[in-house]
Length: 137
Image 1 (tube, helix red, strand yellow):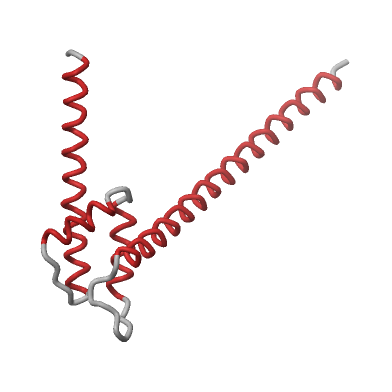
Image 2 (image 1 turned 180 degrees about the vertical axis):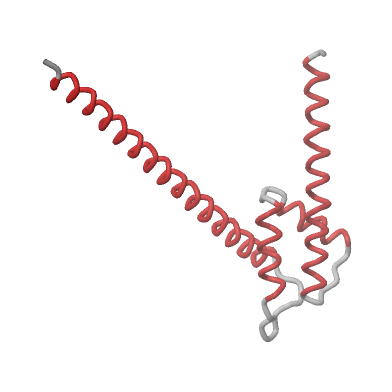
């Protein structure tokens, strides 16, 4: 395949992925709107979705779930501002990353413990072999 055709094919796949992700984000925004008793025009959801496409869907969903369960403050608009959406999404992302870091540290700790146990067994084996050699006449 020619380089130009390859570039176009890749661009189309990326565009399809982005469109699929945008649709998912629009759906999540709609759910958030329902939870907050707000109704926006489809174009409004598209604008918000385009602003949020850089984030992981997992983080968007977690942030929206938290925000959707929080009572509205006195005078607060039904649908939150972009800044508020970003605050909750970034909070969810930070919690996810911290959890991932903890999991890596736990795995690393287990690997270290297994390595230490293996090294101890190897040392004990070598000491037994050495003591057997020195015990022979």
